Image (cartoon, rainbow, N blue to C red):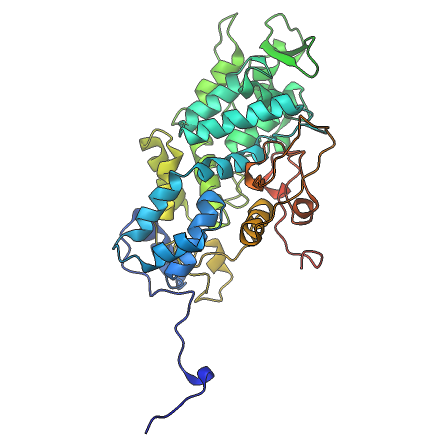
Length: 426
């Protein structure tokens, strides 16, 4: 006789999980799991292959896998197929598109109010960012080029770093530099400390040309404002030693990108972790300060050391994190302790970014999004089938992107992006 059970009574494998974590092999996992054990927290199981392929595509290239790509991965019997997929995704063209979008948020790539770059400059700036990421330009070189750039904002794209900020006075520039490259809120510093850093940017001048919205950004040693008369002071309270004709920005860049700097490497290591794991080891990821301690100091120190040893190769850091069991944990938590999330006991549930979500919907339905801009064509013409993650200008938007929390790119703060679900979104 055959006993027929109702479907609901047949034990079902959890489609989100793929087994218990193995004995940690990577240093990331050793540090994370040791910390969980110390706190008495239990890590989630590893995610299933079906979960991983979707997660990796969205997190690395911001693009939904096709049915063929997903099927190929799921049917593969390659023993290290997850690592192989990560390598393929890091080499895809969409990697540069997606991460240029993320950096364009931080660097405020936007043609219209209140940034007012104008399309020519916004497009040149975005192209430079994307090209730098596609070529895997070392992060220290990327930062140095932005900080020391001079020339036309149409012809020298990194110059737009100094134009894409609402406050171009020296203290305002110092605050933007500190937020972008040091992950700290300099507006909360003592006045003397902020003025000392602002002095590095006190001789920066702007000059318009005969071309509409073009501007020349340059070092002007003849500037005599009050801050230009101060001795520039690094944020660690060390005075700068400059020659009379030296651009102070070069001295600041040299100080910033040294491996001994307590902010530079820590900031980007923490940001990359936050981008891939949903929250920083220091949280928020752009609020580094003495009284905002990392949840796992040894983990953050390890990521910093790896980045320095790799000569600021950000893809190396992505690869380390993506291949870890920590990143590949299921979202089904095994521990209800509120400390579990801050210590990465499970992969966090989070809503897709607005641009990624609309691209996925258009991919599935064969449709395309309709974009609008206050700037007339041809400056803002967007062809059919344009993906949102590849939009060059933050001023070009759509009703969907606005509703789903695309950041306005006004401040460079991570918190500008709003991924909270709302009734209107449902």
